[in-house]
Image (cartoon, rainbow, N blue to C red; front, side):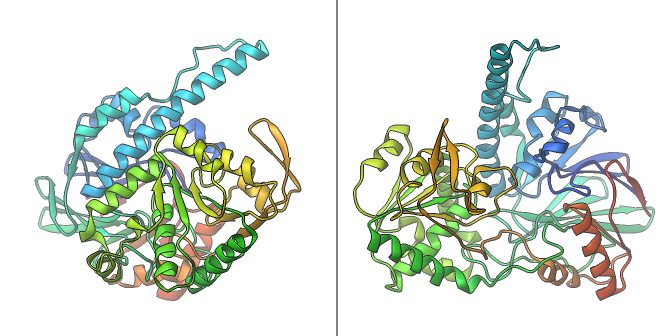
Length: 466
């Protein structure tokens, strides 16, 4: 008998956390940070299951909403191993170190703001965790390759399979044998799309008694990815002819590397000239190094590119700007350049300085290749505001603003169903990791298409898996 507790990513899209109890052991699957404003207070709450009682963590991948609370878990007493793939461990170290730095900066900024406003704080303003807290986590990672069996305890095993989401991302199946019976539960993690560049397609499990399936885009279909290259080509050509830059706010993990891939493809096909291209994100540069270390995770086409000496990570004209001084020097360059910088929603980081330099230039293009959340600077720009505030000053938006759809590390509704249909009929499918309406819509869709029993658990729900 197994018991499952839903402690995150239930009727919302971040904070992924599930506790699986079996044979007297407790395992935490993912330990994610809540990122939506309305749920952020949950990050500060003590874990519903005491951290010291958890035997091990199984980590699907290295995005913050899946790994971002690991330092807090360790602070509260967790001492066990954190199982994941090698690439996930390497990327998680970078992501957690960066998150810890931001936690400290946010706490310092909040304290200064309160002091300036004369607002007394009932308690000291402290970060959720510090870089030192993050570093304590790093030796706890224990890595296993895809398809390698992990023995968690007597009668309990786990297997990781490629989820096709980001480098090293996994779906995980836990199998429990007890009293002559065997039961298994699959945690989807985040499922990627089929036929995307660089990494392999998702590799679904064929059997499971119970399934937890994400539903981030469970109510929609993505635009055709074949439009990405011609649209990107046209945008770069227009900027070159006008003498402007192409400024691309981009996420450090996967999206920046995917952009380099498409630029390389366009260059090899002769669609664009060799241009100066800057990857202006220390975090993205570190993640790109990890990509280069793991060619075994590339799909066949990417593998052929690397073997032929045409790796997108060695793109002609590519400069990786590590220091702030190098970043500032970009704005002294004359002529057309492609500038890829973080953050992806323009909420901070180096992208703001490049926006300030280019947003008033009609010859330049601001190109968005990812989702822009409500209230962010990126969202205001793509929605057509005529003036925006950047680094304390209001600037008129005169640059050409473009958005390319089709980039997504998440499967859409039909691809999620394709992943599920690889399974023989499970006893129950729990739909998680989606907004309330999206999850409910997808649960109904899966039931209609397969006849399987589905449900959308609430935060704190607990179920027996017999």
